[in-house]
Image (cartoon, rainbow, N blue to C red; front, side, top):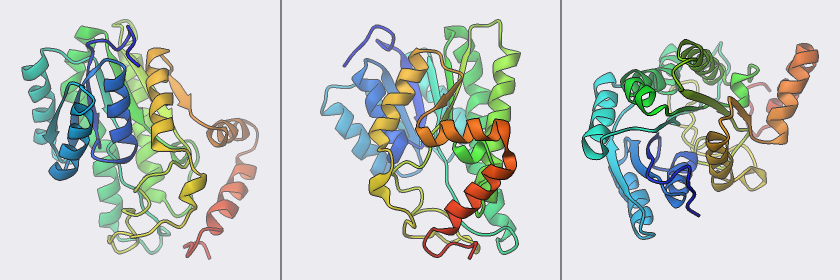
Length: 273
């Protein structure tokens, strides 16, 4: 459903070939925005773009590996060349992991930081002048793992903590320039992120250890995020789980440690066992 806020706004969504990223792109277009999709897999990008075009939406895509600074620069430049402006950047590209720190190869942690943190930094660097000009919106998709350390996900938690610190600072530096910065904090959301999560040797996990049917859908997450952008939220806790984590952390980090350990230890083939 189109609305006045999003009408003719230009948005970039990274990690837009599947999951939350694809759902955000589809939701933004449904509300009237023009969207540029960014991800590594051209075939999947084309599928998402075709879905949007079949519903008369304005969309284009750019194959980009967010770990490559020059490719991120090209993504922004391509958007400006085509549409002449940029109103919204959603830094969604991300990967996860599952392994205890004592067993994980260091290249796994580097990979997590390169995608989840540096990918957002690179895109923001080249998008920022355009977002300031449009008094636009910079969005980072974080996680409850960026609020409190998640056992078995050291690289993931570290990258999400780093993302939060980076975006908080960008907000403060541009406090008087009209830039809106939002950190979205979903809980466990149904997507392929657990299937592609890296294990200790850097290979993909290939399955999900959790019940995906009990998680928030990517489409529901996308609606909450697009609503949060319009309402100029700074921190968007998207479910009871995230809100509870934030509340408990204010009073007892020790209790939260125990809750997180117990929860993650229950997973199938948990590295905590």
